[in-house]
Length: 270
Image (cartoon, rainbow, N blue to C red; front, side, top):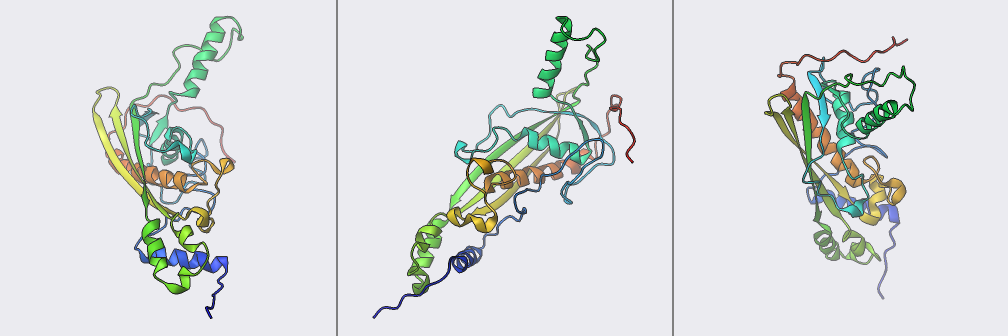
């Protein structure tokens, strides 16, 4: 008579995680529902920024971020934002190494307001006027490659050779869903006055996706969980850009600061 061994779902996940660890792979610890890129930036400084973020005592230049003309190699099935540029803009401003100028939606809004003023729609004494925009002294261009390695088959094969695990219904199929995901990034910094590339840095990060067992890693699937902070794909991409920006800053800190435009007026903090 054949005996069946019943093992609870939590123990199954622990065993599966142990098998993955035995294969020499490490998951990326980025926190529940968040990533290494978090918080805010502005007059109050870098609020809620990760402690590993490398910062500058003073900004060296104004900075604009450009979309990579070749795009980003991330599958649309992950339902991530189309561009990582807003993510990098936050990192750049939090670092304090740059004063970030907008060349995207914010700039289009400024142009629209100027056009409305010229059309007579806005007040004559409107603060929107020509000649007050700040130039971008540097341009930062990101590059991203996101790859997926199917490790599930080898893990499923290992489970199939262990009688106690092999008899657990659905465990082999669960193991086949395991993916190791890696993001490789690059940041290229160009001096807009000379067109010289003055600094470049690469970054990388890897995480583990357990598919249906991904709850072990705090995965929040579905449309409500799409983004940089609450999917494995988004977290690993955010971590890779964080890594590349930290490496870029070590180069930027050696650059002579450019003559900066007047700072934005702020009120004293209590």
